[in-house]
Length: 374
Image 1 (spheres, rainbow, N blue to C red):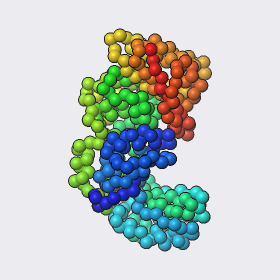
Image 2 (cartoon, helix red, strand yellow):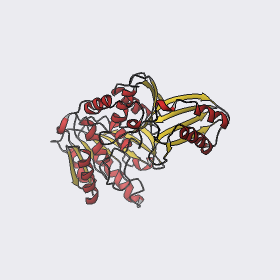
Image 3 (tube, one colour):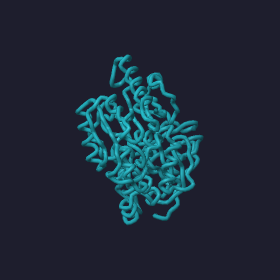
Image 4 (cartoon, one colour):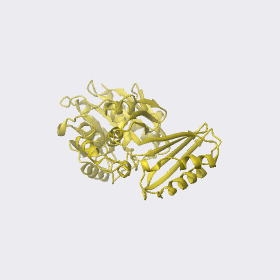
């Protein structure tokens, strides 16, 4: 099983495909190609282990195990029953089935999932919709693709964020914003003046220190037949991220809410990251460092309120205008990477904005932009 060649799909939030492709190439994935919703690549089980451990942007890693044509439920049931499930799933293995169909004669996802559950039960698997290994069926143009979710819980659930501030940014989106900002930890500081639960600061510091995103969690592939504990141990011990720059990394994170700062610090302790300076401050105070000649130019990376945390439109416009004022007053070399659900507010910064990415978060469409300070 370790040397078996596999068709793999690493899913991500829409709009993050170019950044995920860059990340996976950095993790040693070869012949990867971006497609809507993620990255396809050919690899072995070791590469599946590495991507699960080392990707900060992927949501899950699917291994393709079968593909066949079908247009009727009896045909689907028969072909699923003929698959060699024992190659991947042992008797008693808990599984959960998910199906999606479009532009096909088979269109009822519930009926598709039922036929798959019957085939799996026939080989001794147990259906567990809460914590089972995910089996994904995707039927399009009457072609059924069957995949195993090797991740388990979505990969953005790193295992350290137990305390959340208001309107927290999901870990994979925070990591994408940091990556798109260009900050690596080898230049000036990263500043987040709206830290909330600390997600941006923690993701930035962890990546700069070479800490693999999945270091604190387990994965579904550990429950598959043929799981190679020795290969996984080597990968886990070696880590899957580039060599970090150690504890010298400086990240400055602040929030006007003392409770948010306390929770963010607790999250950082669970994450095992160092080099973050936490402060209770208004954002204007924090951004004063951008004009401080004793501080080398860095990057401001932030997720300001955009109508969820503050109700007064004037207050929001003033807040974004304040961000823009601070960046214009900054020393040359400072940069801004900002994410928001309202482009009208971002324009109140008065800065020349360049788009970074657009995606979905919590049912809202959000986008990220960059701008030069000074």
